Length: 132
Image (cartoon, rainbow, N blue to C red; front, top):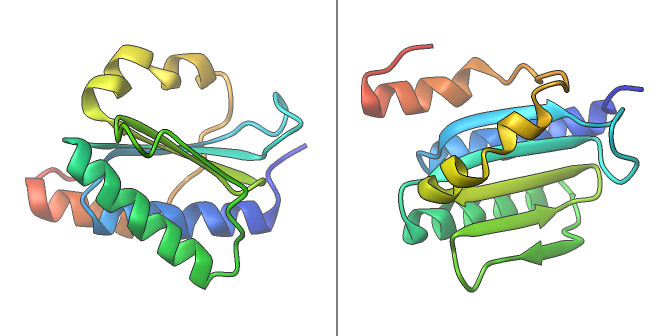
């Protein structure tokens, strides 16, 4: 089983929204074979709690505009790791320190990585001088 086209579409929208707020280390995994509850995990990082909140706000706005319904939000009060559950897609926005500590990539490394639009990385590259 693979992620649905709608899940991929929402993942791309969320990734672009996160990139617009200069999120770092944006990566998406197709977890549909491993989990029955969702198709995709999208991971991204903010340099501090304020940026994490900014990323979350933009992702929520863009996904709402795309017709997605937020089922659950966790961790917003602390701003260290915010989880946004849209059923088919779960977005993890972590503070950079939390991202390193929990290393979700290590847990999901056996799942296929979803290729994200080049524009996701172009925004970050333009601000940091890094090219992928």
